[in-house]
Length: 111
Length: 457
Image (cartoon, rainbow over all chains, first blue to last red; front, side, top):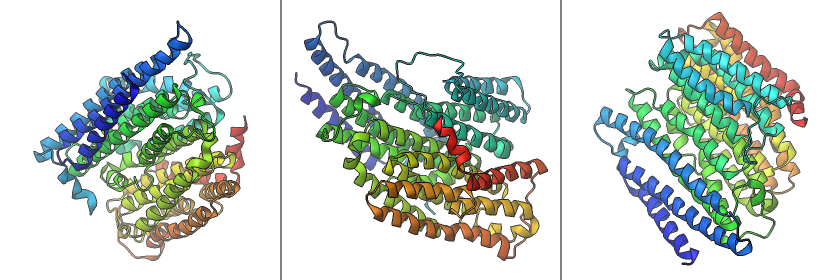
């Protein structure tokens, strides 16, 4: 399958994520949209990794080109997991104090 | 490498300190020992004696630029610990953990100043910011702290998403994560490279709070417990700038002319918005938040110019700005009233404190004989040497003039207004350390070459 399809898919997912972050009011949903953005990147990285690998194989049968893209995906997963632990803890803390996860609450500091 | 490994180890040591001892003052002592160790280790590495020889596959490159910045950042942290370390004990019960998180941030700082691969850039920035989300939220019962943490977290992860997408595009275009390998020549600006570069620029602008991506900064800095705002607004921000500069110099240096206009617009917007909004603030803490945006505009000039003067200027700027801001914040933490009126008549009750505060504010405003003057001077010279877009230099000079107004408002309140005794209780040691910080600022204002000569190694 041409790599273009993967690019369209992941850009579409990424844009859905951005639109969600910008329009939703529920902190958990915003958080899920951010995860969607990160996973769109994962798809794209794996697709590119495969593309570079095939190009490398065409030049040299023993080529290992493209493996670093997949390594990067693992790092993104680890960092995303770390972010989830911190982020959910912050959201739970907020819920304990105001019994809501609505980010309209976030306008308090403006003045 | 010394700094990366030792700061991570010392973070764990700090966590165990919290388990072993219940005394609230012990963690500060251990942390100061740790930061002294870090400074020594970093200095030894700078002198060519690394403790660890880890094979990183070329993903990290330790240049004198990065190491000298580490030195500046660690020294600023030392002053931060000495001045504000005991105030962390008032935020919550987990003092040792706060220090541990700060050491993890320093680990991220040392990675971000030495990356040679986009993977390390991503990890460095993340290691730097994730502990900060926790520090922002450390005042658990305070709604403002909650709000600041959530806002910072959502903005931070959002910009991380943008950065990752940019990295993925660049990987697709070039097949490598190494900044050297990415160094695409003039005219190789395919749509994919352009998208990747713009996304990286936007995400870095988010991290250094450059306009138009600065809107989270004042709220986050205002809501975070003041002790941690001081750290966030200085060392972390300066480190993000070093990463920004390294990224655009190593990866996109050859097509400088193609993105220069974009960064010039960001710089001008940051300077104008930061300075003009700072004028209208009623709280000194919020004023400092906007002033950090305005100072970010000046630091962006180094990225805009991308020459040697700019790099020297950025190091000097990081030192001058960090020390002065940490000093101002250290006094601010002791105040009960954060408004400008709270400073009324401070000179009468605390003459030494007011005099030192004046030196810090003068340095932030860029008055000659302080380090801030030469920092701004180097930045403007770098932009001039660049030879293009002179209007940016004019914007810089005009906004520096505007900035004098709001810094002098504090000085005016301290010296020329009557007020009641703010009842600040500071020890003699605190005053001495503040005096040393002020002396360093004046010495750097007379002999900036003493710091900058280190870069020539």
